Image (cartoon, rainbow, N blue to C red; front, top):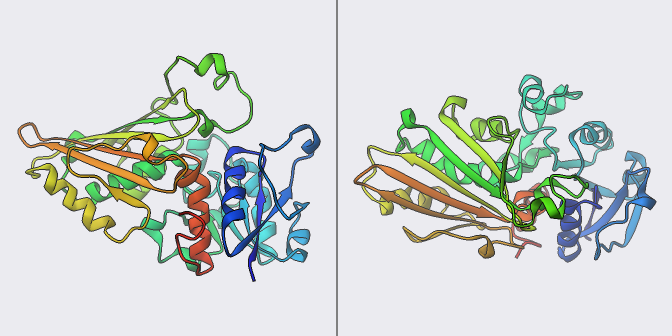
Length: 335
C-alpha cells in the first residue's frame, strides 16, 4: 500500500513541485495539509492535484494515516508544526532553515531571530544524502538543505577533505539563482520589472546559507567567500567555485578527487576535465552536475556545479530523503 505523505505549504513553488513528484511516485499518495487562514484568497499554482485535502493538525494527519509530513513553510511555521507532528508519531522533513544549523546560537546569528525548539534542532539530521545517507533512515526529523548549500557542499567538500587546496588562499563561491528561489510571496525584489533585463547581487557577506557550507565542508568563515546573485529566469542555480592549489598537477587529478567521492551517487554527474555544465542540463531534474578545471602553471582551480533549485535544491531532495526514510529505491519518483 502507498504511504500517505502530507504536504504543508503546497501553494508555494517548492510545495507544488513536491506534490507533483509525490503524484508520480509509485509508493506514495500526497495529502494536502491546509494551514493558511487566508487559503481562499491564496489559490495554489496551476496543476496541483491530490486525492485528499485535510486540515493541518497532527490529529487530522494521524487519523488520516499520514506517515510523513513535508513542511514547505517559513522557519517559524516549521518550528510550530514539527513538534506536534513528531509527537503524533509522524516523521517530518522540513524544507525551511529551521533545523539546519545545529545550535540556537548559530541559528540566531544567521536568521536574526530566536529558536523555539532547541532539542529538535540538536536532533535533526541534515538531509544531504550524498553525505549523510547512513544517518537519514534512522531519523524522525530531517532538515532538508538549502538550495545554494546543496550545490556548494557537493562542489566543495571533496576538495576541502582532500587537502589539495591552499587554505591560505581560501575558497570563493560565486552563486546565481533563478527567482523561484525567493519563494512565491510577492515582493518588489522579484517583481518582473525589477528582475527582467537585470542581474543583481544580494545578502553580501551575510547570506544565511553560508553556515550550512561551513559546517558540512569543515571550513572556517574567514576561508570562505560567498555571494548570491539573482538571475532573470525561473529556476536553476549555477555556482562557480574558485580555489588555489600547490599540490595538484592537472584537471584530471582534480577530477579523480570527485570521482572517488561520487562514484556510486545516483544524482551526481561529473563532466570531463575542462567541460562546464549549464542550467539546461539539470532543469526539472534531481541531478547535480559538476565540472572541474585546473591550470597547473598558476595553481588556479575552478569547479562549476549546477542544480534545479526547486528539485535537487528543495522538493526532489526532500523526496530523496523520504525514499531513504522508508526504504524505497532512492531514485523512485525522481527519474
